[in-house]
Image (cartoon, rainbow, N blue to C red; front, side, top):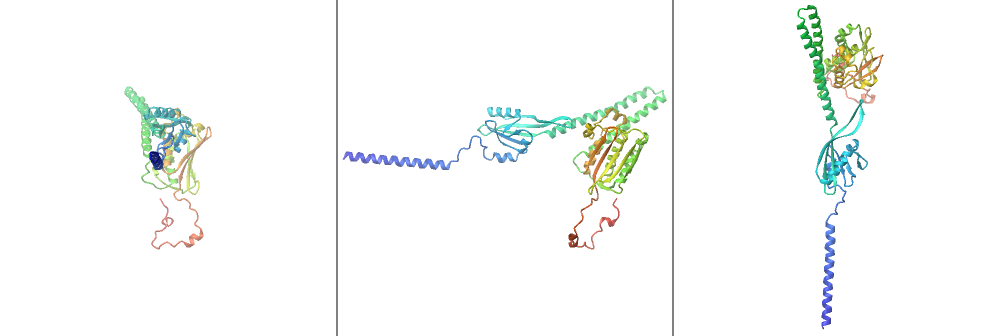
Length: 410
């Protein structure tokens, strides 16, 4: 009996152990099915990719082995990333420091210097590097500061140049005033110095006027009022305003070209731009020469105004910079001619405001040709197919007359 009882108890114990083991296995399998798999060590945390895709800054995610897991197209375009690596040593060093101590770091760096307009330039970035998750990932954000720095540099140069240009005539007037005071008993000396004071006063007035014009047109705001303008009339007015300077050097001013071309714009600004080109041609032309202002229809959409002189010409390496404010090819000669250094900059901004462009051709010793290209007021439209004309409904009897029937537009 005892043997049979022991055998029975042993069997029950084995059955209980087997059931417990099976139940444990079932529970373990169910738990494995309900728990998500652990993310790989180098995978991005959920949702990070979506956030990075909408950031305005250039974004780069680097793993624990300095490999790039994700980068924006801007980061690659700016030369921050190449292949699977950060190619900027400063960024790579910052990423390693952040990975080591977990502290966020910020700095400004210059990337990819390139040659432009004869000067070494590069792109500037405000960089922020921070840890991302707990697997050694590092996030690098770079905001492009290049345009902001360029604007700041232009502003600094502009203030410095204006201060210098204003100081020259103001200082001359002050010195001449002292000289006149000291020569009060010499009538001839007083007349001579008073004439020079008038010259400096005119130069100062021209500079102030040009600064006011430039401040009006260099912003992003559109011109308030644009009206139809006949180029022939604008050119006649511009030539008339430049006639005194031309006569002083016995330079002939001639207008010509296709007649009756019209543009839409600010007449005063357009006359000012053409006059600046004529004055520039007169200033840099020898005596007894000719300056020609001619118009022509460039194509069905644009018209061109060409100002051609027989002057000294412009060196080829200076052509790209002559439209910069206060830039002078020959500073000494420019001051002798009384120029402000803003004339060609005004021409460029006026032309741009009117939807056009200004270009220049020049050869040293052979003269220059400046060309203003503007949209034509009544561009030639392509002919309407006969089938379209046949099916088009006639205009209502109460419709206004077309512009051609109302007479010439002024």
